[in-house]
Image 1 (cartoon, helix red, strand yellow):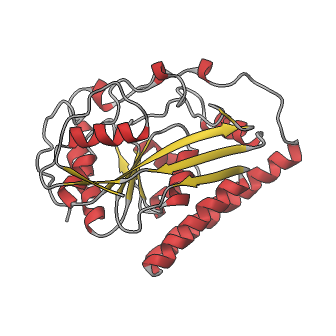
Image 2: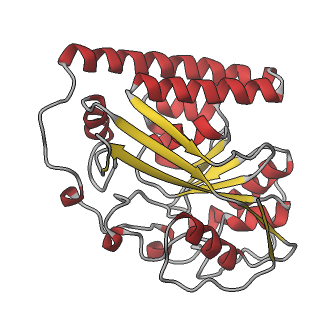
Length: 297
């Protein structure tokens, strides 16, 4: 049974009330993406990448079914290996800085692309929190459901406390959960595109009530050695358009920087915790309020 999460009522900072708060938006649009260019790789190479990724998605669906039967350590290794091989199949190189958590944690990251999910899983396997629409994506939706993804229905804000409770239950059971507290993708480059309200605090309540650490992950992308918005998945763009751009790119790199874990004391304020985690990922003009936290190296 899912336990109730105390302190998550009709709080304007939790995103429960108001469609604008519940449906975050960034200022990013087509202008944030690089200008169209000739593909870096040949058509046969792009087709090979696509077929390889489809095969990895099918393999991932089978793996997700087997995961409950595997010892925990072996399951995490298998999930990490699958994500890394999928990135490699896409032609994306992974760079990791810092030490991934060994135990349960609420993993929080900035959100740029659909590639973010693979990057997080390649570093620290976890259950994902995703919008309900992902469930209907071909292959990806079935894989996400089989892997135990927690889906959130943003059209039903009153369901948010129950979703937070499910995340808390997963943390109590020893599982890590990964969330993107910005609630939407943005290009990761232009500061005026950044979601204006920053990290939403609701899911941090799950870490507080479960007594689980929060581990900030900073994701960044480089194309041909330079910071790039090429992998971004923005606004009204279709997933297929973003996938095509990645399939055609050569020398694409995703870096994941693991920051020090935040250990919230009992009764810690989720809003302050969210601000501290956000500041660990990228500079923020918003003040960081004091709260009862211990930093672990």
